[in-house]
Image (cartoon, rainbow, N blue to C red; front, side, top):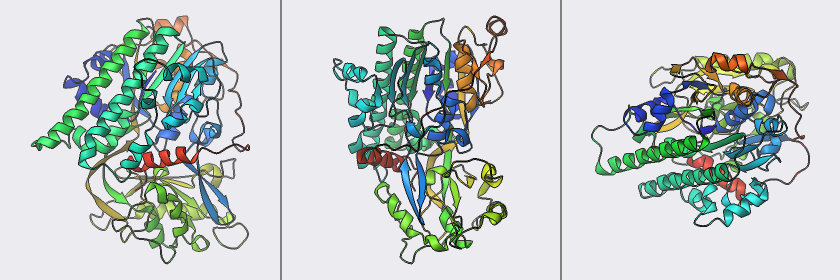
Length: 526
């Protein structure tokens, strides 16, 4: 399994047709491909975790990089990690059924759960790679590997901090080079493991795709590329194109190394597109009487919610006079301030009506500049409305913007402002590509669900699909003779995981700092 973070056919197909990715073009023609529909909020944490558990965020509990915790009219933000995943992952399902696993650079896998095989988590500063690697002997092997810089596998905190306010032109080239170097390093690690100790399920995520597309989408998207670029712009575009040439070569290396008898699938957690405006969701809530700013709350007049100030944001809100608010831009979520008996907030018996009214007002809102609808398909927390079990930190309303961008949560004089230039943002349509002895060839299929990936991995390994799996085995991708010789079979439920509420040591300040810097740089913290 090769994961391409943020990959979209909207970009890959033009690159294939232009000769930039010839191996991928051949691979697609020999297999099947389809859009892969992401989670309700197409964001890295809920999407990758849904992909490797076959369960939705409402079940596995991961909605965002951060989660809110509530205490006495105060809100705190905690960093999610593997201990907050409330469902068993495919790595564990496979490992406990006498198959071996290699899992490289997937989000949220630290601290690692012991498996029969190898695991290195993604989104980790290089200084913490040792504690994010299983077994620890693998880290020592890589650290001592000749002519290999293991630090390239992790997030470079100095580089992230340097770029925290966005990249200056002088930093474009080093940033693109950094993504190329990291992808090469992950390719080298995986090739080493595949040659020295191959496993039944081998998986890696290349995340440079997402990082380049966030910052350089205007250089990549065919509809945005300047037909008469300056020499500098032409140079940066060629550097981005060179990254995809290298990625194509890495994919070719891994596929060839896996051998002709191996089923290979490629996936992405979400797709990509352009965002052209900033939507200030908390300002909208304030203007509609749901949120109250404190008197000295700063206005976004060139001021940005930088990573080191996100905690300050919680003190910009007058909590006693606030009924609804957004805490993190990346979640695109609105939370309702419930009455805890103090008489302040929304009373439980009024909750459903309150959410319905708020949803209607979101749908009815029009941008004064063009009379266009800004909020589309706001989704209510139906479990909470029905009084069913739910996570206390699950959003009450999840919104989608018309350009699929992420909301801004700071104060502003306006609800909607145009961006100076288009940026890259997520889209729900990711990619699925499959090729191998059990997979059909030469077909484009109807969209699949991200929840289907764990079931199809289990089936291709001839393992039973747990009865509590939400996803399905998409039999339309499987050869008919393979289905006859190896029919889909079902087995016992997934195993329970450790209680995420147990006492534990929190992630280090350095890890939090690196994550915050990453979120800011990629546009999740406007």
